[in-house]
Length: 435
Image 1 (cartoon, rainbow, N blue to C red):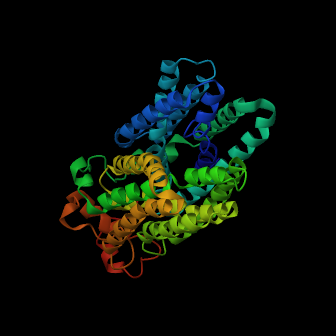
Image 2 (spheres, rainbow, N blue to C red):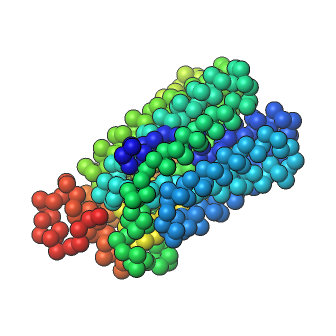
Image 3 (cartoon, rainbow, N blue to C red):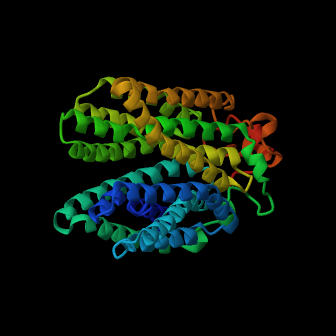
């Protein structure tokens, strides 16, 4: 198996493993006789632990430099923690298992990004990141279909069988990627082990801060949208909310596959900051549709728009973070920090949205939920202003806030791109080649 084929296989099978039971956790615990309050406490505490570990997880990946091994370890922890739910009934044991799953899940995104960088290098990373997300969404579709099919005979245990099978396949895929195919230095986002910027210089980069702020506001507006739409369908009584939500999840995953492939094609042809701007432009339109489109059938186009929003961010954020931090040795640390801000917005979204719906009704509540999306759009447009004049977001460092290490490498990070070689010939000749 070639390294790129192995990478595709890893992304496909990890789709159902990364978050453990995910949305099925509440259903499983409720079926075991748990009250909504106890389920809520487990999910909230585990979620907060996962948020707190995002940044350290990225730093661990940067320092360890062995993403393949870290991903294998995280997969084992997720599977063991999930299977431990089958005999566990006590609150403490269930909480401990889910904390382990949350910590391991926080390790997955930076480790996968590092693995990709270590295999394909910086120049090919944007294209490969789109392919990664496409395979990931395809795996989600398969896993959802298998769970729906097996649930008829196995009941709520079906999700455990699917998780175990996908985890075994992802572990085999990791083993089939040759260790020599992963460059540990390049996986850190640098050329030399000694070249390592300070953490403060990364967090002071205006571009990284704008990405983090935009992600927080975007997910504050977006994360609660589908659950609230399903709740409205159930309350108004226009259809079977569970069936419509299941259809919406599959439609969104299929649409995200196409969006990911389109983004991988566009990443080397347009200013990459547009990959952040476009989702932030789509989200206000989506909230307006949610406010005024009451029929259940409108859930489908609303979820297709989510594919153009959240799906595109899933591709673009690792690409932009790699651009802005390349040469610092802190790429995964910055990505983990961005994931923390994203998680904060998503965690607050359900409370924010629920309060709006209770106080001002469904229509105005959805419009109010979309208000943070305008802030996210403003952050994305500011990010676009910091893009280089030649249309590549990684070319111009963000003024004095960028560290000397980053400034030394960011202008050259794309100089070997096949799109710009002729136009930047003189500049490229005087700068270090891309790796």
